[in-house]
Image 1: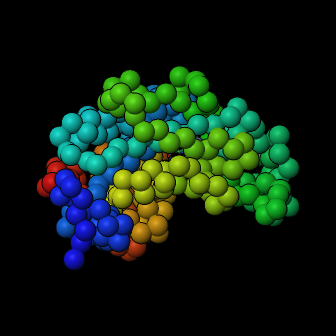
Image 2 (image 1 turned 135 degrees about the horizontal axis):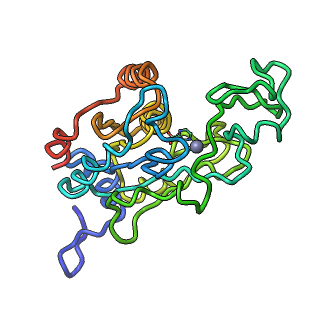
Length: 258
Ligand code: VGL
Ligand code: ZN
């Protein structure tokens, strides 16, 4: 029933569509690894997780992530980078540069690190305040030197709009714009998305929840993520599992992808 060309390949567009959109997904998952924000500032720089609540060591994700990259035949790997301009809304030292909204729980002159403030705007912006971190083209924004990225890595930049933060590697926090990540995953017909990196309860969690919402089978790799706050890590995991996400250890991943 299918036309074949002289090489014996079936090239009916209808068949190609069925194959790419449906059959391939049923017979074999197409797996992508997302490595979130394994950048100097989160490891030993200004937003080092070791100085945060849970006192975790972000460097510990590098070995298990490199091991996955070396041993698991992912169909694609993307690395995200938190990539802020100097006047970014999330930096505590910029808090005085914007108007705080009348309903804000904290005033500009009393704002402390990790407080949440509400800035004026349409609509007003709810923003947690962080130390200045991952400033574009600074050392702190570089991927850690020991992270294996290979040549010509797939990089996704986020948080470059001064007025909007971006925890998820898919969309900014206000859902105003998209990074190129979804398109990159569509290009390879990805079905399954594995998420790891920093920070578990911030950008890793947000990215994983968005991946589920988009419709990917989504797996968080527990031992390849470190976070800010224990309670938040636990609630991130709970919420993700309630949304039908899967959490595994990195030694389980190879068998799932092959
Ligand atoms: C992140 C706090 C602020 C993250 C980014 O990558 O998890 N956390 N900006
Ligand atoms: Zn940031």
